[in-house]
Length: 439
Image (cartoon, rainbow, N blue to C red; front, top):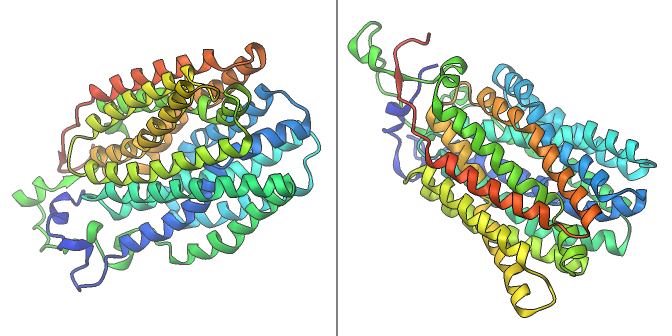
């Protein structure tokens, strides 16, 4: 499929289609944002409220608990190539709906049957995590990439920003529900949210603008160039997978994204134990602070999305990872006992909340550099390549907590990885625009 960058330049202002109606791509942003609000608050960010109750109910170590949750984070990467192929072949919607059904079944089964570590791992990884990863790490992001080019970073950032609000609203709520009732009722409520809200929202989900007679960003269609003419030969096109793999930019994106995940995931999976067991907070205070971090992240992601369509994406990614690395140093030095220590912990919450949104800029850059046609596949290869890090870093952090009684030796390597990831992004050069026929 040819790239549509030249055609997109004719899009009307204000996000409207040529007929004066709101471009359906923005309705896609609204639908996927509502879905991601609940998925983020319950699964991607809200999993932290499950860490301590499950650890204590099953009587397992922090490293064993982190192992399951880290494999869940890695699962989206391990299935990346297969998910990308399925989405590119069958469309996002045909992947999204069955994935949500799988997640609903997983939450309900886990609520009533979780006798051992192995049962927990089987249900959480085989149903809950698989369904969420397929639906939200792949189908929703790939879907928005199909609908936008000039405003790709803004569209993806709005989705990610609203998802952050899910953390603000649902993390403290879910923690309160579990504290006041039980872990079972928290899991039942999670499944009910998915069944009652997320599944019906799929009715409005559409795969591509071309399926509705539209173009990305609501552009109007110019007269087609004659075959063999100079204009036809100059028409830009998307990269194939093989062509993308030959570029330096793709490999720097891959390494930088992997280092970023190594930096953040070990700390985020262990964040509740770090704040409660290491820094001396109550579980509700920790839930409130993680929720506040999500609120900060909401604002920062909107700002990053706006800037990502106007200034260098690699500059945004470099700055974000540098500030995030400083935030980890604040967490390492902070505590909840002294005024200075509290200030440093709050500094970490601010830095992490402000800069965690850099992840969406990575995917916006991938779409900008290589186009729409093979976006899901190229993204799947990246997530697959760093999947091992998503397992190793949280398990290492849990091992550190179990053996040393604090998480210092996990937080410091996290800061180093964040600085290294920023350096990778700094050296990216955008690959050239391709014209003519694919190899």
